[in-house]
Amino acid sequence: MTNATDFPLGRRVMAMIEDLAQHTDEPGRLTRLYLSDAHRRAADATLRLMQEAGLNAHIDALGSVIGRVEGANPGAPALLIGSHIDSVVDAGRYDGNLGVVLGIVVVEALKRQGIAPACPIEIVAFGDEENVRFPTNLSTSQALAGRFNPAWLDGRDQDGISFRDALIRFGGDPGGAAALARDRARYRGYLEVHIEQGPLLEAKDLPIGIVSAINGITRARASVIGEAGHAGTVPMNMRRDALAAVAEMIGIVERAGSTRTDTVATVGVVQVQPGAINVIPARVDFTLDARSPDDAVRLAMLQDIVTECQAAAQRRNVSFTIEPFMESPATPMDKGLIGRLEEAVRCLGIEPLHLSSGAGHDAVAMANLCPSAMLFVRCKDGISHNPAESITTEDADVAARVLIDAVKRIAA
Ligand code: HGY
Ligand code: MN
Ligand code: MN
Image 1 (cartoon, rainbow, N blue to C red):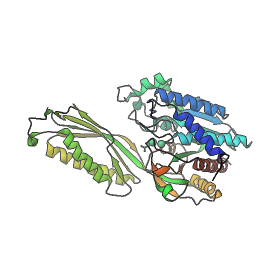
Image 2: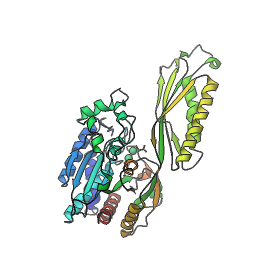
Image 3: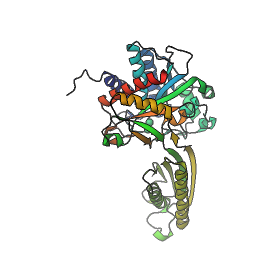
Image 4: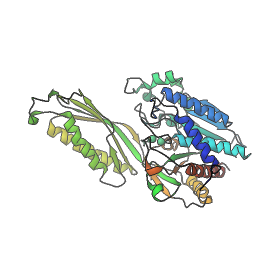
């Protein structure tokens, strides 16, 4: 039985997670979309936590919270540590937030140990990793990598509010995105600690694992247009039922994603018009999220889905259109940083397990700027994107100790 004095770093992590979890746009559940009021409150809270830890912190033009400590050699290339504080709808509290909080805990611990890191450390809390609100792709981390796409500013959320207007309301600066690009010579690497969001570490009874690569993702919007009609009078063989067609297409997506064990394909949003009990659906808009560790496999799977959906639409005399709006390549993590993480994990007497990430992360964007690597933390039943998401204080403590050791090795 462990007593309350154990896992001081883990308890500090959990306290900060609790602090951030209060900031939600929906009372009773955690929803914190990019540039929402809750995101603003969480960004302000993160700024405060960074400043209390002794970091020189600010909120940048796109809403990311950036804290920096100069260390023993201010001119040396810095080490970035971070993740995101935006969430999906009805989210868990650890997805993203854990990696930001752990970065702050590491800086606090080094300060407590009287250790000035051998290089500057920047902690980053990105704001648009989930890309749930606007049709973007890791916009706030891509901005640091010099790959912000100005067209994203014209994207609109489901209420018709543009990224640009939401950013101005948040207190950001649409014109300042380009200037956020970092000079790659000034950064030695990016580390992100994240919950695994899968069952492998728990199955292997391991508290942490090292990410080998992050799967590639394609996200698309599709529309099927049929014909509205009276649900009571139009014979079944004379209908052009858009929703019945999409039901068949969802089956096509599920089968395509299931052909291999390492691919996935998901229809996450379905919007039916006019949406009345006695009207044959005239139009359905739905989303597709397709992923694989191999880009050629992902693109072939997408092609199969499109071909089969087109054939189904033809049979049913409805129209089918699909428009990819986000493409993220499969991204291997940096071998050198993986080596440092392995040394740090072994120092705790744990044999490092390497695993790929089915989830996307800001590390995909940061890999365009500097060598990037990720550490996964075990989460209960592999659950995520769900309020039941949880980790233990002990595992949080292990993650903090591994990160402190890895930072010392990388900074040296
Ligand atoms: O969808 C993802 O993979 C990540 O959680 N944004
Ligand atoms: Mn995440
Ligand atoms: Mn997520």
